[in-house]
Image 1 (cartoon, one colour):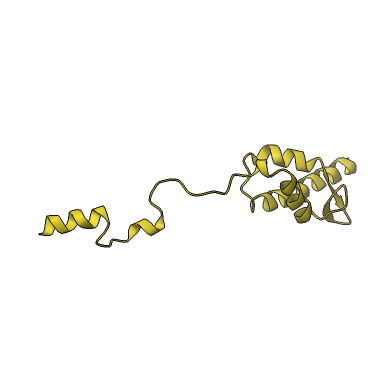
Image 2 (cartoon, helix red, strand yellow):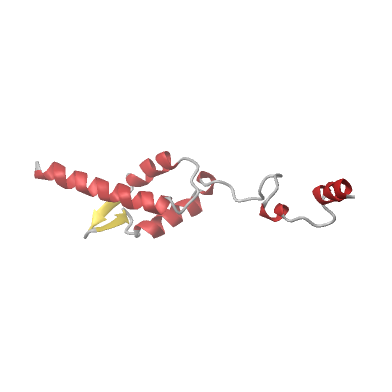
Length: 103
């Protein structure tokens, strides 16, 4: 019974720490990535490390460097108005329409 409790505690510790690290990345499918990474992790001297000895954060970084396709692409935003589109100057269509309505 103690063995099962110890394994459950280690599994929960790994899951919690891994969730925190993955939350800092824009992962396409965090559930699948989490399952893959959990199979490579272990608790050693109360620290979570990859089977090759890398600490959790370093190992996750290395994993995504070798598999960048698992992260959401970082590119230009869509064609919608961004935060800079909220200002009005005399050249915007909205400003021209407002000036015609006033005049």
